[in-house]
Length: 226
Image (cartoon, rainbow, N blue to C red; front, side, top):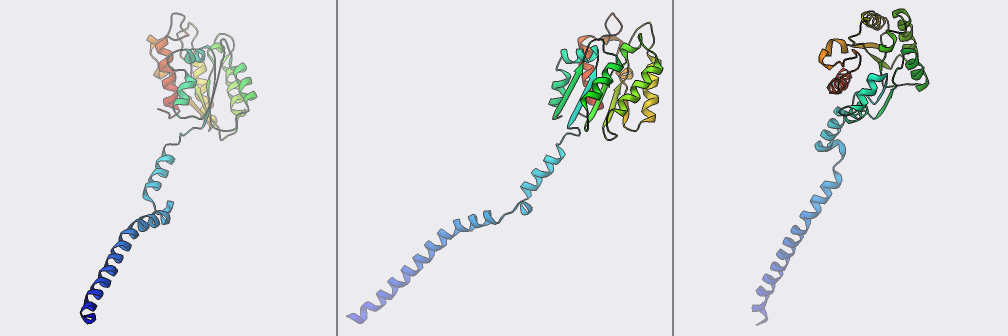
């Protein structure tokens, strides 16, 4: 009788071993996935690499923008989405918009010198109040002052004049072009060519609400912040 029970014991042992192997196999699949996840590095992960590329491409071309203007820039702050908010919405991290009614170019350059800008870009929207109070030659010296107030690495954009006054602003706009050709970091924002006569109020200087909205859009466009 004992000799007849041995095959049964062997079969039982074999079945137990087989069952144990199956259980070990099932438990090991979880460990394999976990180890694979731990071994993955940013260098070998295509999803992370793609995220890095997108992040670099989405960086704004300008991190800092300073705008110095007169009553026309005051208007750009009042109508539609303000110039300050528009620049921030476009991704600029540091925005300063300084605008005062009646500000002359000399007064605006004083403000620029006090601001001590060291990087980013500067937008100057001055000159309208100089047309009746100064001369194109004096205006040109103020442009030189503005350029000297910032490092050569700072880009200056000068928004030219657009008026419908009895005194022409052509000589002043010509000075902006002349100085832009002399200073590598100075560019002209040619608002005069962009603007429409329908945007000008009856005084021939200030703009309609829509004109101010379009002016803000133009500034962002010229800065490459569409």
